[in-house]
Length: 212
Image (cartoon, rainbow, N blue to C red; front, side, top):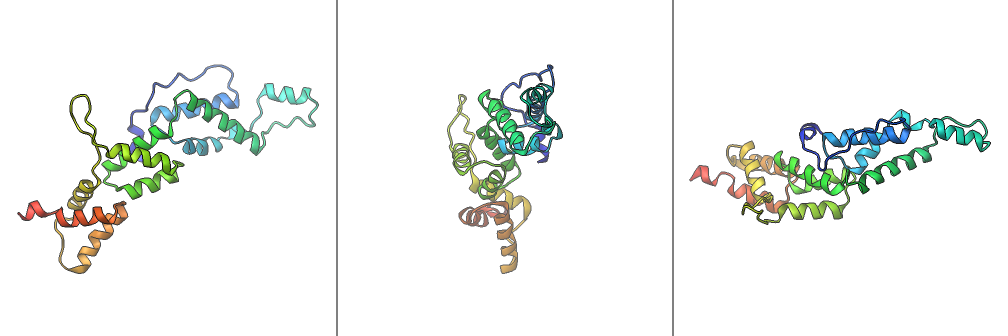
């Protein structure tokens, strides 16, 4: 993604371990380094770690155990299932420590997409592509749209109707003339991920103040 790399990550991330660099330790360090830059979903971290060559290498200790147990050849490469198990163990530990959270990632992702003028449909679709289930994305979306004042009385909530209107007004200076021009503006909002009610509101109100 981009400008998301400048976001502030959630919790304080622990320093990287400096002990023996086993595949597990390297995977943890790599995951923490990425989380220190910005929030990542569990699936994003999984896919990233799965591409790391070092995760296919058996550690010296594990290799010695294999040899001692009489395993033929004492393979120096992890199987696909072993790599998958290693990654899941690393990710589960990060979740337990509060270093990775899909809910926190989804909330951060939503904020960046709102700043880009994207609607709820597109945001939820992109969250699904990053491994966020509908229950989590729905909860994050509802929380973002809930106009609850903070301790100072400020209300910080997303109004997708107003966002659709503002996004449309920034892109087009007027409602346009004829069916073709109106269809262009409607397609623009649909591609941005706004629903038909938000589209209708934006088309009716985007240029009202200018015309007045």
